[in-house]
Amino acid sequence: MTRTRTRTRTRTRTRPDDPPGVPGVPGALGARALPPLDLGRLPALTTALAARAAEHDRDASFPAEGFVLAREAGLLTATVAARHGGPGAGLADTVRILRALGAGDPAVALVTAMTLFTHAAEARTPGWPPAAYAALLDEAATGPALVNSLRVEPELGSPVRGGLPATTARRDGGHWLLTGRKIYSTGAVGLSRMLVFARTDEDPVRVGTFIVRAGSPGLTVEPTWDHVGLRASRSDDVVLDSVPVPADEVIALDEPGDTPGARPDAETGAWNALGLTALYLGVAGAARDWLTGFLHERVPTALGAPLATLPRFQSAVGEIEAALLGANTLVDAVAGRIDDGDPEAAEQAGAIKVLGTRAAITAVEQAVALTGNHGLTRANPLQRHYRDVLCARVHTPQDDSVLLTTGRAALARALDRRSAPKGD
Image (cartoon, rainbow, N blue to C red; front, side, top):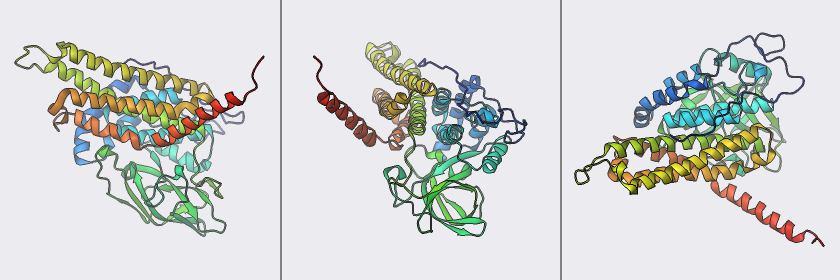
C-alpha cells in the first residue's frame, strides 16, 4: 500500500475568550462525552466498510451501519473543537480519515466529510446559535449525527458560481417556514441536520443557512438518486413544504453581496478541496490493491506464471504507485501547512485537488486497461471503484474554475514582473 505521512494534529485555534475545553466545566456547551478519536482503528474500519460496499452499491442503499462504526471510532466528531469537548482534529488528520474511509466505502466517506467540514468550520469561525450546536453535539454523544449543507437547486446549480436560491423562508411568528426543492442532497435520508441555503421573502431580501432537523413537518426526501457512481450516498432530492425552523436557528442571515451564494473563505475551500481529494485517492488506493492481488492470482495457461512476474505489468503498477504516492504526499504536505496557518497553502488547495483527483482517476483507468474484461466484470470491485472515482470531477471547486483562477493569477504575476522597475 502507498505509504504517506500521517502526522497527528489534534489542535484547533481558539480565541482568548473561548470557554474551557472540558465537558461539564462551566462555560462549556453542556456535559457530554463524545466518542474518543481512535485513528488506530482506521485499517480495521476500512476492511469492515469494504465488506458491505458492493451490496450497498448494488442496491443503492444507505450504509447506516457504516456510520455507527465511524462514530464508535470518534471519526464523525473528530473536528469538534476542544472548547466543545471534541478532539479538535485538523486537516491533516481529516485527510487521513477520509482516505481510509474512501478506500472502504466512499459513500460513508462523503457524508462523513460533510459532517467533519461542518464541525471544522464551526471550530474556526463560530456561526451556529449556541443552543442549536449544543443540541447537535448532545445527539452526537449518543449516536451518529450527520450534517450536510443543502445548496444546489434545479435552476440554481451550484451557488458558488453565483445566484440567489429559489428556496424561500417566510416568517411566521416564532418560526421561519421554508419552501423549495434541493437536489443532489448527499446523505439526505440519514442526516440529523440539513443546512438549507435559502432566501427570505422580505424586501430587501436576505440569504442565509437555515438549520432543518430530520423529521420536521413538511420535509420529504424523494428517492431520485440513480447515479453511475457513489450510489449508496443517497444524494436524493429534498422537498420542503412550509417546513418550520425556529426563528433563531439560522446561520449568517444577511443581505446578499456582490456574489450571492456566499463563496467560502480560502481555508474552508481548502478543507473541502483536500478532504475530497483524499477520499478519491482512497478509492484509487483500493483499486490499486485489488489490481496487485489480481496480478498475483491470474496465471494464464500459456504463461505458466502469474501476470505479476511480467515486466510490462510491473512497470504499469509502478507508474500507478508512483502517481498515487506523489498525490497523497502532496495532499498530506499541504494539509499540514494549512494546519500550521500558511495562507499560501490554502490558496493552492484547488490546484492540488485538480492534480490529486486526476491522478486518482488515471490510476483506476490504467488498472481497468490492464485487466480488460475482468476489471469491468460486476463480480469484481474494480468496476465499482472506476464508477466511484469518476465522481471526483463534480465536486466544487471544479477543474475549469480552478484552472481559470490559477491561470489568471500566473498571468497577473508575469505582468507585474514585466512592469516592475528594472534594477541597475
